[in-house]
Length: 285
Image (cartoon, rainbow, N blue to C red):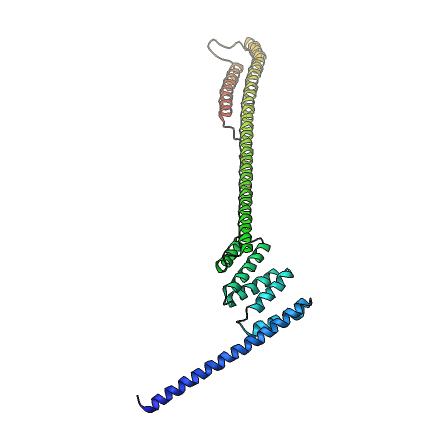
């Protein structure tokens, strides 16, 4: 390495050290300014001037990210005003900016308090646990943790009971629906049985009607035959036909008798077809 290179390295080292010193001084200056603004905000807050306090706290936070007191105090101010979402954000910011365990403990403890206000007991438990990791001796945090666990268990039991009640109601509704369905099916079967009985009664009535018609037909044919045969006998006596020869009237009577007999047979066949026809029930939709 020649002298020029050594000189250049020395210059760069000096410049880097100088830059770090300047940077450290700027950080110190910014932190001091942020601290002063925090004191101003605290004073305004003690005088119940929340608006002025909020402005100074925000300025202090913007000046230096190392000032954990500003976001923590602003978080407390929001918490007192029940603006819990804003309070949680500032407490989280304070916990991340804190370099001491004591400050981290206070930030996480207050985050747990916000979760308790929201009734988010599971997250409250985790926040209090984190606070105790940074300060295991704090009895208030330990008490809050025990309370959060108890409320969480109670909440879980109530949710489980609500779910069991819903499941029970659902099962009862399903049972009722099934009972109604079964009743409907039984009614349909009963209606079908009544229709079948009515159909059988109808068939019997139809059969009786057919029998009565047949009987009436026989009586009418007999009634018609008698005068026709009487007339035929008179005409036969008048015409005096030759032996083994039928008269015209006798031929007509014979044809009519054959037609009546054929009609009876056909009526019986038709009646049997009607009785054998299947009864169609209404479709059970």
